[in-house]
Length: 62
Image (cartoon, rainbow, N blue to C red; front, side):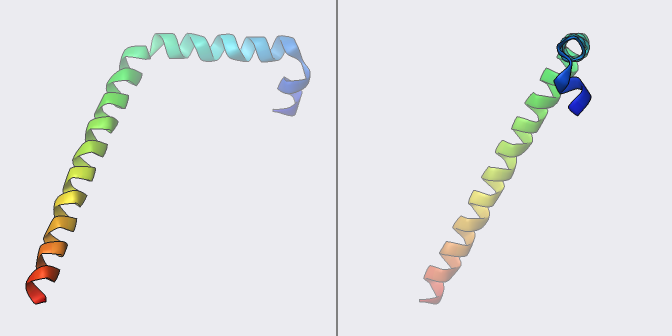
């Protein structure tokens, strides 16, 4: 990485290669990002339901 940072042509080339791969696989990247976001939303909803159950049990005990 230090060689790339010292040579602007290598840095430009690395950016071009990265851009090429992002463009080539953009549909897969977007699909995976959407899938990850949906999984995150499901996780948050599940945790919210679990927390509500715990709070309800705590209120019943009192």
